[in-house]
Image (cartoon, rainbow, N blue to C red):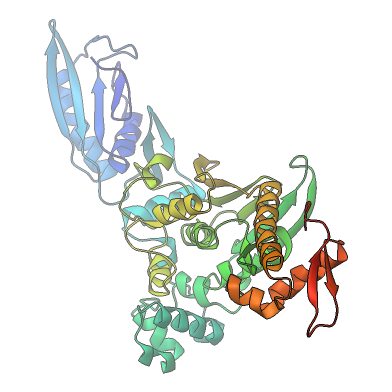
Length: 447
């Protein structure tokens, strides 16, 4: 006989309280409860097997309202009972309480876990629930217009929708119930004051030094979630991340130290899939890496490795995900982490690590090595400066504009480097601007 597991439970004798185990199986993946087998899997048998086989299904119907298969089995002249429980597609309670099989234990559900369980069994998500106290006045029209403009730009919304009324937009998005009441998703996405209705619609950012006790600075971003990623990105650019500078043929280029599109994808995932009955999203910024955590476990059967390969999409908040898709923020085919991988590979950074952590999902990624980038920038500048000196060496009378034309860049970039070469005593102008010439004094280690 197999050992006890997610789908198997052993009991030496029958007690009516074991209906609780049947309830747990029905609320999970189904399973089998054996009466007449001890905890070690040894068959000890039961008396009155035929009477129990008639009483047990009647008790289960009376207490749970479900029908199970009860079978009498034989082994070495011993009779024992098998109670075969199918999974239920609706929530099953036992004496007003809900139980679910988890591993080899049966656990009672309470609080948020119970709410999630009932919603899942009913095929609904939390963001689909009607908010009885909200009205159309709680919706921010600026957020609606922001969404419409994003969706039109992404080609997922007809441009004629730009003039639609707020109520019409929400109805078209399925965010209004049949009796005209707003759903939670409408307030999450477009609410004027989300804190009035929900307490955890926040994105916390902290900069840390030596350890988690060394909090250097922090910010709290709140408000509607349709614009949250933009607000987070702005704070990160202004306060937490570095804009890296490099030159392409003396053309000054500024880029964020981590790939922006991939970072946005990570932010959208955290915002879209967060459990909004749980804690705020938390982002910890360290000198060498960043951690982003959002509450809410992965879909059943999914592991962090699942996300890194081709997989189907199972959004926690179905309405939010639908709106994010229409806005062009996310795809509907579970390709988000593929885009993240491509972004980090292009930036020559390691692929972010994904972990299941503390009832949520934790994403870690490396920051760009600033010292390495500075060396790369310096090397690029030196290469361009050497070209400038070579042009001058070949033609001391060459003008700044002629150098710029040869390099295919703006004159201002060349002028800036020539000025620095003069300040360093590497280059000297002899004679007037018109009619004079350049003289190279020292070519060692320019700039």
